[in-house]
Image (cartoon, rainbow, N blue to C red; front, side, top):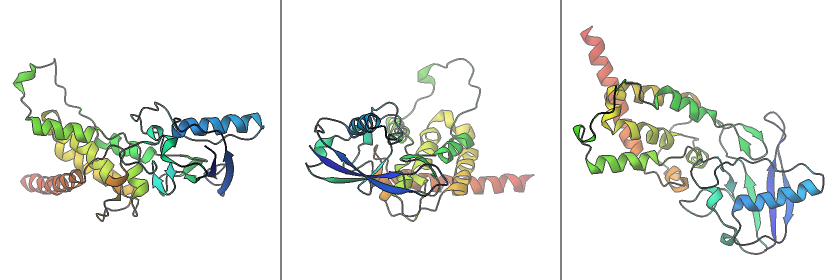
Length: 253
């Protein structure tokens, strides 16, 4: 395959960006998208030119760092697929492929295709954990968890924190990410002790960095793990209940 790449190049957060065109000949259809970029970078190195900066780690669809906008779509044209799982056979010989970093004000560009996604970390730091001292491990059967609850918690925990939901959302909202991180703890017995404090802290931290959800649904379409919009509804319900709970407690003081 021979492809033409239109790649966003930006030297730093405060520098102006521009598109550069790169010829990519002899690309195997069996390569992953990141392997194709590796080949292009090797050629750029051989020519004494600056290679394209992009983020990656596990290359197994687990870590979420391989985030790219490909032809205007987060992670590319395949649904339920991270960039590292996208293969070049998805494209045709002679295609022009436009590659950009995540499009979101909350994710400033570090260099080229790499962005700073630390606002997602701030949300997790606000409450995406359990601090209750449980002591020694209890007998598993002492705390029964209904299968449907366990399945829902696992579905939420599938979120890899890539930020595709934010990049795809017209409002730059992070409700899908936040709701997944809230739900996988709030649905389980271990998360109940801090349930109300958790949802308030995480939602209010989210609102410091990201836009508001208006139910476009682009987030679920872009999510490589196909996290359901249902979790946003669950988070909104818990947030309202948490506010009412706090008011009752304040009224009793």
